[in-house]
Image (cartoon, rainbow, N blue to C red; front, side):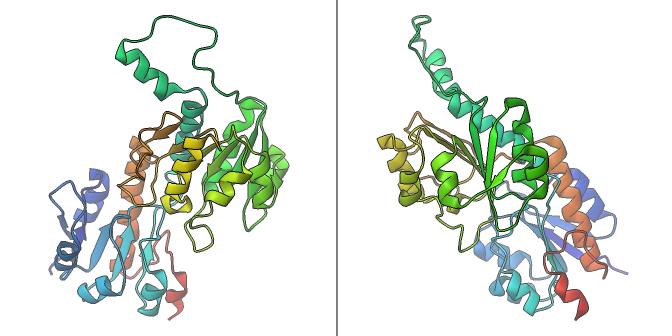
Length: 325
């Protein structure tokens, strides 16, 4: 009996591929680049299962092309690339990879906070240039972190982890979320506030929310005007939560103090003028780039896909309502 065919749109860690290969015939995109749309649609035509990335648009056209598909597994915790309602309408299971990258993402958020606050990237460039002439009392003065106010936008797993890591710095915490986070309130003394209050009081803002119609461009010109002139905004969530042209204007004018970005509105492109600014740190979407996180994502994506193909319940199914159909 032939094995089910699986297509993986870009190479993932070997542990995930090995799990798939035990029970499936696996084909992997041999090139280290995102597939063009036509390539993606052609390559999934015979697949019973597909593992893809955030750069792969999973919509009605995709499902029409993948006529033998039994399930799709996203190699990411985010899933704004998937038309989940369309998948549900078709009774098609789709999944993501939450939890396994929570700590890695929270750690990177803190890395960005420190990098921006203490001007680490900016001063590293100066040292490498050979132009530094020696220590001076007014050189490269940055921002204090201990005792300041941390604003969390999106108090889910990652936002909670970012807040928990602030304990060593005796920070005051406020957060914005649709739901109350009792752990953060009881254990960390966090306050649930309205968005405008967070903007007005936070010294550092960590953006950890999903991308939804209400969070798209939530950080725009109007929001930046309400922030402290010294405030630092860090985004390890979704790029389109920030209107990037407005961010460039706010950073250039000194309306806010700085920003640390791992994701972008039109990724992999970034807004014109952003990379020339010294008060922003820009990273190439590396929040989950640790050995344990990337291997954990590969294993979870593989387990999800195998469950879909063989008629079992996937561990992290995004549309569980299809199970009753």
